[in-house]
Image 1 (cartoon, rainbow, N blue to C red):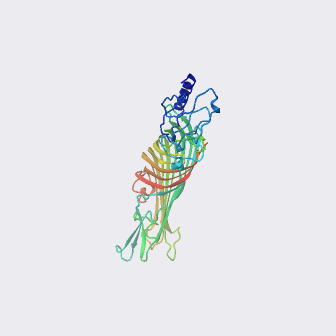
Image 2 (cartoon, helix red, strand yellow; image 1 turned 90 degrees about the vertical axis):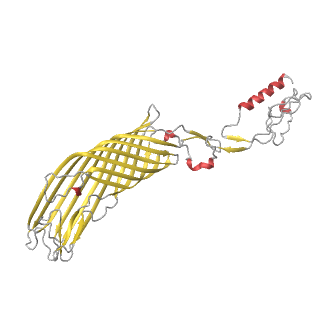
Image 3 (tube, rainbow, N blue to C red; image 1 turned 180 degrees about the vertical axis):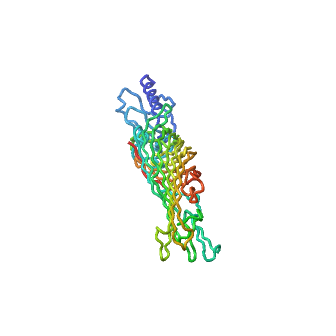
Length: 451
């Protein structure tokens, strides 16, 4: 074996060992065969490749080399290789997953989805959601009784403050945030303002006295204009509004993955990951309620309001201010995300109430006669609490625009509700009860975008 032959053999083996197949591409391994270097009929064995033919000073390109037999592999030479290339068996978009592209196609967007283009990428983001919430009923106190005047004690029908259930009330949740970029630990940061509310609930009801009956109120059995009538109507309205200013910190997505398409093009795609986050801020909430009750005499002949009738109004106002503590856990994928977000707010409640009752009865056939005139106001500063939880699911139309739907729960405690303030008998001055609570729940849906 001369020097030229030895050098060519060593170079071929070095190139073959350095240029191995890529990690995500597997080729069928050829059957090891002896390497035969033929020169002057002298053979040397070794290696997995086969090179045959006499060595001479004639240029190699002019030599005709035989094609390899099936299963013998490839010929290493200075001329183009004869025979078909190795068969491509598996192509994986993620080498670590060992998956074909078709195995998980729905997990990837049909275009590049680098994490650098997602929400919290260094710019602004906003969300608008429509909310439809239901409200619980609390302190359902009896306010009217239908009493048989022919045979007292034979029949008494009670009517309470909530004769009808509340309907779903529409509202909104508006979010505006500014991404601050990553911190020293590589976590995303943002400042966020959120308005949550606009819901207003209304309940209306009324009763007519049965035959041989009159309507009275147990709130005050001696209230002229309220006792002895034959029609009562009640109404209750309640609303909720909340404003928040929060600082949020959240884990970032990992490094983008470089994925090769079947056509050989490479693109960046965000990885799938769970993203926990923390929320710290300030929250202000306002809950206002108004309750109204009216009595009248409508049986023929009807009595004019100037001679018989009563009106009782109660207003309860709550301002809750406190620190906002929250957390979220989002499972982020290229096409969709889902997760939980919750906040609790220990607060100080600045509650106040005002109520007024006026009535008159000049009909000598109805007892009692006279005038009812009560007015009362009160205020109290005490402990309050707000807590809410959202179960959310979003679909990424693009990396920075998503549709989102969810189910929301909200609890407000330590508040003055209108129906806890009944004091038509005027027994206590500045009477206020701020121990009420209300539970809300309902659907939400909308969109989020960033720029």
